[in-house]
Length: 72
Image (cartoon, rainbow, N blue to C red; front, side, top):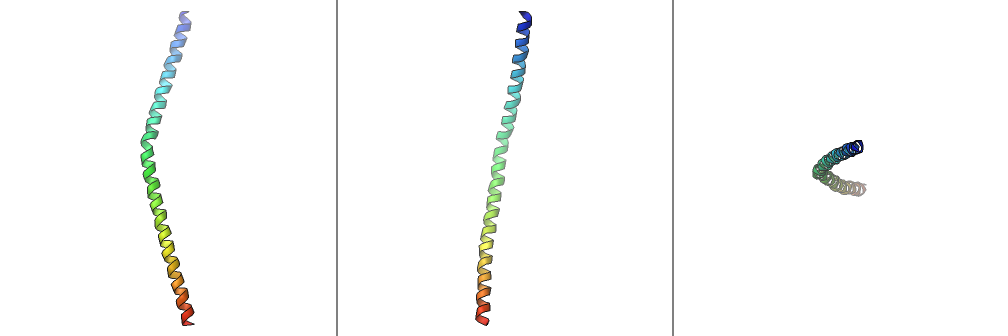
């Protein structure tokens, strides 16, 4: 019986250690989420700036095209 109890204690201790390690990992992941959100927000802003610049460039190209047709 003593051996069985000892084995159970070892299994419980190992399980507790694993749970504590998982808890630490979850905490790290939780701390990383705000940083990831900042990166995504920055990327979204950058993509928005590209979209605006592309639209402006499209307008400029159209103006040049129209001026070319007028000059002809």
